[in-house]
Length: 300
Image (cartoon, rainbow, N blue to C red; front, side):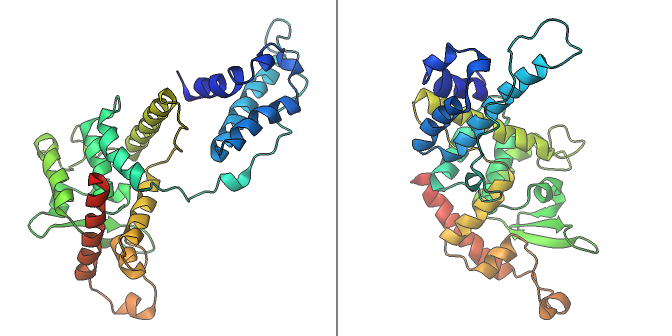
């Protein structure tokens, strides 16, 4: 059953059976407010906006069907307005770019992702590798070939194309955890150019990672509903980078080292013209602190 069907069944048809006996044209904005208010009051503020969107789309579909002159037959719903359109969306609960996984969510993702249907072992390894390397950019990791990994030096050399001019090299220190993940995929992709590739012709597409994360979120929603718990908020692959940033903060890594490890642009004349160091010592100290925290999260 899709998320939309589950949501409307739980929070509309089962919670307000009297509304279901009404015709669509008789549903009023006050009815919609009653539905959304009940969900909002239980603390599911972001989810309330999603439920509003589902209801709005349903009535919009009905209106389109009613007034589509190319569709044969008489009107089916008799709608003259969308009762949800008058209900404002709570914008303060839809902040862009602030989603990250807390410690419990990181552990759940690490352990539950392999159990998700249609999510392969390479995607699981890639997701764990993104976490183990403190949230590197997925596209950069996917472009890296086996030659870009030096397991003796415990480093990965990524190309950062951001900014003007030629892509700059970003050298990432690898922990034992990250190396173990690479070694786990070697029997599968060791003969390919890229560690994370399904057929050897090109690396895995970022869209595949997005699909896997979406399936994971759906998987966790289903588990929550069966346990009569509030479904967790969705997230996207780019939120893993923000998650890495927040875990670095929790691990006590200072801002400069965090930025170095995640390849954020360094500014200043001395940086631009004179600093040619890869700052590996600082990066290793940062990833070491990060990995110790990650160990506690996964074991606790």
